[in-house]
Image (cartoon, rainbow, N blue to C red):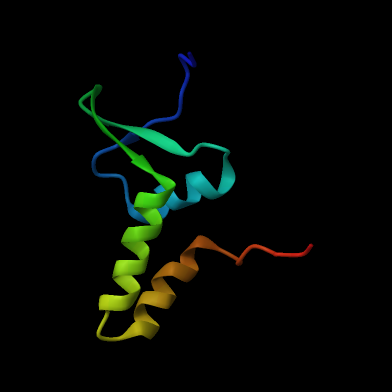
Length: 78
């Protein structure tokens, strides 16, 4: 068990969580409220939320601009 595991607060921004997932090997993060475990969030949860935001946006270019805050897209070289 990792006693120094990375956690996020309930109010942590989705982009901050996405950034953590992009820069670590974590697949899930514990979610805390006042130092008590209230749930967990997974990479899949983040992808689903971002997809929903993109597809439900009345102005997709705004959603893309928001998502561009994550940084450069990853390179998919073989």
